[in-house]
Structure formats: structure tokens, C-alpha cells
Length: 216
Image (cartoon, rainbow, N blue to C red; front, side, top):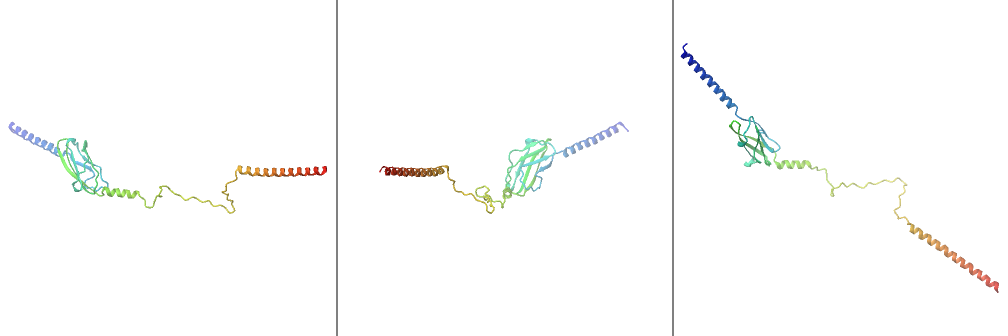
């Protein structure tokens, strides 16, 4: 084989190898693009409780300065609350209170670390409105069997005590005081003294009568 033929063969082989390497690198670059791996709420889920945040998890780092998340509900009302927060490959969007039941759509657009833009959307259906959930919670807290007293206090009947047969019930009359006892004793003493004086007077008068008779 001549040198010219060898050169041609080497050049052809080099071209084939170079093309194969370029194709491999291009394919790897195509498959390395950032994609959405998971979300909370999940796509097409039907939560009973309204979420307060939207979480989007990607398989690669997301540039924070280019992220946008739009959350719209029934009637086209928007529910984003504040700016998007990004931590490496996780995108977080806070929400205003979701009042109405129905379908909510989360549209997003982010840029991966390699500069590739990613956009898409997920949806979820809220099965219970905020008003219904509040009413259910209030009804579960109330008990129809329990009725408080008007004054707000537990009013119990006064217990009664049964007395055995023949038991003496003390009188509720007020006992005589010591002053009343002293008054009664004083009256008795005065009566005795008066009787004594009357007796002494009568005896004196009798003796005087006897003396007068003797003198005659």
C-alpha cells in the first residue's frame, strides 16, 4: 500500500472518530437538560386541604434571577404571595389563602445552570372550599348534648340529710342572755327585801302596842 493510500485511510478514520465524539457529546448535552422531577401538590392531585406553598423540584440547579411561577384558580384569580424562593434545585412559591374549591394551574418558567430555559405547568383540584372547611371544624367543636347553665356555672341542687326516727331537732330560738338572768335575780332579791322590811315594820308596831298597854 502506498503512502498516499495510508494517509487517506488515516484521514477518513480521524473524521469518523471525530464525528462520533461530537455526536456523543451533543447527545449527552441534550439528555443533560434540567427537567421537573416532582412537585407538591402533585400534578393532577385532588387535595382536601388548601396548600400554602408550591414546591417544584428539578434535577439540576436553577438560576434564581430568571424563575417565574404563576398560580391561577377558578375564574382566573391569581394566588401568588410574594416572590419566588430558590434553593439549588428547589423552587418555592408562597400562596395566598385558596378560598374556592376547583382546579388550580401552576405555570412555571426557570433557567437551569447551563442556561437552558425550562417551562411547563402542573395542576391540582381543591375538593373543599375554605368556607366549607371552617364550617365543618366549627360543627365538630360543638356538642348538642352539652348545654351550659345561664350563669355559666354548674348549678347543683342542695343536698338534704335524712334524720333517724326520734332524733331531736335543736330549736332555732335565741337563748336568754346573761343580762336577762341578772334582771330576774334582782327582782327576786328586791321582793325578798320588801317582805323583810314589811315584817320588821309589823313587828315594831306590835311591840310599841304592847308597851302602851303596860303603861296604862
